[in-house]
Image (cartoon, rainbow, N blue to C red; front, side):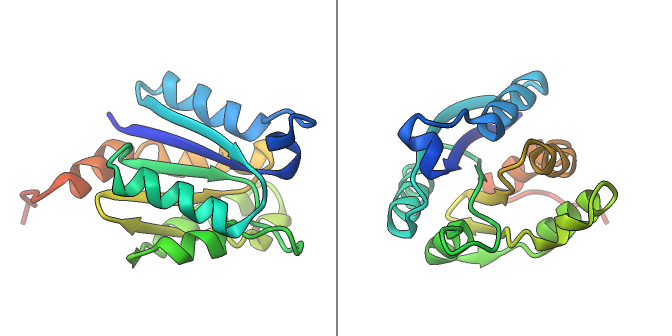
Length: 161
């Protein structure tokens, strides 16, 4: 199983004026699947603050997988992908494609998410949308892969064939 950290990017959630539905859904689903939720935070839609938190969790080895929720849309305050790009070492472009494909089964709006998947050190960071439906679509793609992701990032792995 994987160690998972959850970062919610939302002015309202961080100010306590909005319920963190996306973060709560991530935590519930991860625990149901047997993963360990090792950290959870909510920050305003501030690029530098988000990047600093992501970098800290990655550099300190807190989690195998950091899932963000929120800040992936088209409004001027949606800066989670930019913050993620700021700390990225390697891209994992197939993950956002898979998440978009899953989301498109339910809504054409899924194509508007700008979420990224990147690695930094031994941690994978994946941006999920802020909506609970978008989060659910992303988790449907990610959670079955989480144990293998953690294994791959931990070190050398013997591959078949």
